[in-house]
Length: 373
Ligand code: GMT
Image (cartoon, rainbow, N blue to C red; front, side, top):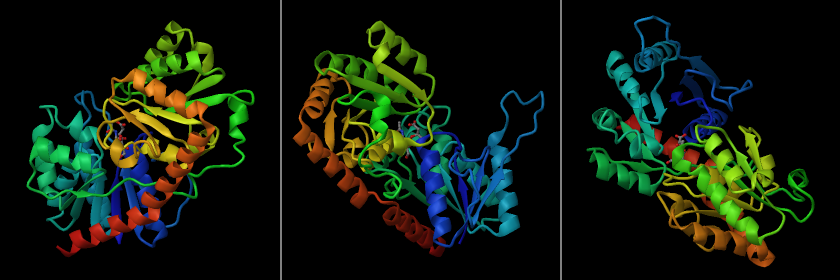
């Protein structure tokens, strides 16, 4: 199959999923054409059957808001004419689904469009009145729509009432890449023997509530000696987290690592993952932690309960129950038997329910159905 894959190239769950999907499809013999404004960050070396096509917008004084939607549509048309794309799979509805619709029309309807919803394209950005009409229109015009969790599927149906079926295809991890490492050499880098390490990985947007991560950590460290917090990632709220750590007197116990590529190497030295998001359509970061054998304490919000099994692979608390999150974290960090059980269950669930092969096959089957329709 000749497949166009449209995504945001920067650090972020939707770009990661699109890139890993494209790479896995290429390994299975398909030809995958990534189309984006920059090289997706995991496509940094030559891969057979994979091509990257950059979208460029000429600078012009009139363009206060560069028309990316149009430039992307034009690039999809160009690539399609060049290689004969059978379908274009867009990740994140805004503006990708609208660009794909336009490209399809320019190609005389000879291109199938699949849209995968990732979360904020529906829950935060998409439901804004500036975008709501175009989102529902683009969904209705897509030949196939998928969502990364049942919760996101239901939310989309309630918010937009599209006349399209939405198929749930979960996110996935590569169990060869994300796995527990023994002995975890990384641990030594984060503190002396006996140190307990807590991690948070995100894009530091308000929805992630990074100040709450620091707040919960500050409460934990009052009762657990020798505990450290790793804050991994970058985004608009880094300074707020930093200031909170200073204000709470825990700055010396918190390491701000910024953007990191080798997340498995970091997770190898971690005891607990904190994800107190306001909402999370899926929570790929939590799945990555679980795959590395790290139990998760997270919000009972969005699709997180579809990933984390309460009391088995971690704990789920109401987003504002900071005391509850603190108690569960302390319980896990101070009970080695419970920790081992949860770490094993987390790894087991990630490896058996969410492995790449399983979900890439589901996408392949979905593509085939859309192409046949
Ligand atoms: O806002 C983000 O967290 C980034 C966003 C993205 O598109 O990169 O993440 C969303 O998609 C991920 C991949 O499907 C999901 O794992 C995240 O849960 C989701 N984020 C939210 O729903 C807040």
